[in-house]
Image 1: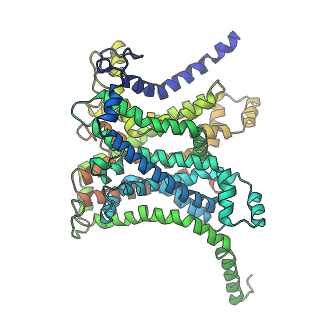
Image 2 (image 1 turned 45 degrees about the vertical axis):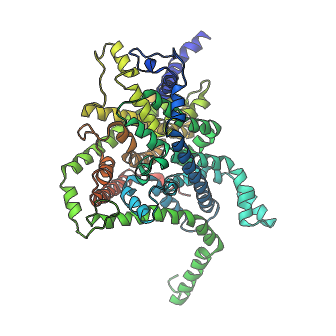
Image 3 (image 1 turned 90 degrees about the vertical axis):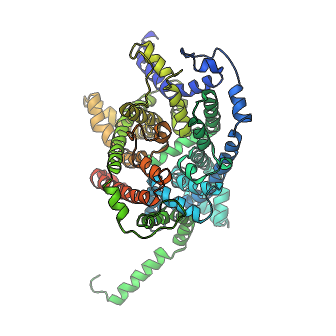
Length: 275
Length: 315
């Protein structure tokens, strides 16, 4: 027994170091966000809060624009999620369930758009949106976010669509099911973990997006969370309590979603890469 | 086939074409992919053409009209020391990120591959830094590195490495290193998870056979692990480089491209030129040039580093 523990010491230690490196910063902002202001900037940082207060959260949620940012981000993220799921599921069905010439090329084209550096689109997309009258509209962000999320979503669906036996579809077709009926009644339920994974991916992509939101949205009332929070960072006197509470609340929905379907998410993420 | 008449050959071609391209499956296939393709064409392909058009005009603010000025913007950009500096910074950025992330990702993947209590949970939650918004990452690290109340400064002082709190973003070098490390912290778990999946695909028999032949750890890594990982490393190298090149918000929100332009990479320069300095056409010219540079990079990468087996395991 002792021998086993000793042999496992390096492993246990390296796992510990890895998890501390990755997760401790999150603990640190959360634990600091419930400290009294004096304790936050104390010369000697406290690992465990010595004081407890919700004043930063109260300020954030009741006396700042943050709830507006939250609402805007939520609208954009849900819109992005719905459109991405529809477009990528359709495309994935075509690419992975039907055999036709040019399929491989289409798949590559979609993949290339994922690696395409979005920064090259800043100027022309702003130009386009201003011509369409979409500047300062949340719809503009939905349009851009779908473009950022959908190609990778198609890639993630690969693993989930490929594993469903073709015979199931054939049997349903023999029973007189229509193509759409087959997709909705047979494929989608079986690929549900994959669809959940891409829905979360689309949500997170949109929830996180900063660069396009920072130029396409002009008014305070239409800002999303990342741009709104960044605005608080930029203020002259840094209010750490408010910022840390803001960061915690912003991370929260991601943590919840990830807790629910994190397994599928990672599975979809990796399955495409190592086929 | 040589003695068939042109007529029958053409008929056969047509028949092939009809059976392949006009079959119901083909039409259905394209119909399913079409909505996404149109969407991407409207939001990527068309804007690319628009940026070429903007780059040969002299538009400053969005919405104001411009005149055709030929290649003036390109000349100005190509002779601008700022563009050269940003190009160099981008190169350093991409290479440094690749090095740091590869080392960390390999280490993390090898650790996660082991059997230990909770490894299934660890394999999922490790990518937390990749899924939270960049602005959260930025707040985390500004806070950790803060001069007042920041844990890093406190620890370095307690260990006697520095005697007063240092501003990590106040000199060019420390700012650049800090931003690279922070971005690597954000991305290495993502790469680790993909490497881990690839590692798990390598058949254990290969290692067992090598052990029978008396191979040591280094030899196993060199002759089994690396070759098996080649296709994944190729994809990660190509896509990872492009994604890492594209990183903007971490840099912008931590340093704003400073101090004195030390952390201004090409994306930062393009953003700054278009939306802070209001020289839209010039920024468009920079985008087009950057696009060309990346295209050349991708072509060279594929030409020289593409794994030989890639075509054979095509479906």
